[in-house]
Length: 116
Image (cartoon, rainbow, N blue to C red):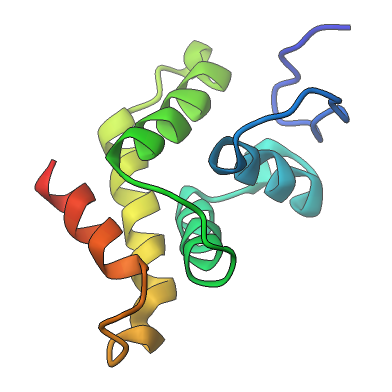
């Protein structure tokens, strides 16, 4: 079976993946396919993982998520800068309610990503 499944639900894989690269797979399962998951929602999910589950995330991990998306859609000439902007937009949107909590782990992550 082909590794590349276009917009379909991901196959169940038994290999251990980094949590940050598994987010899109998990969302694709929940949404019924990769093509159904907006990049902004990926950012929202990543923010939630940082806030609630201690996900270690920064510019390198963001690049890996973007590369994962671009690789899947390479035949459609994806724009990495647009994908990055939408993911960061989602991260910020999900973090709105945490503005007053300056100790929240999301703020250093967003600052590091925006410095890059």
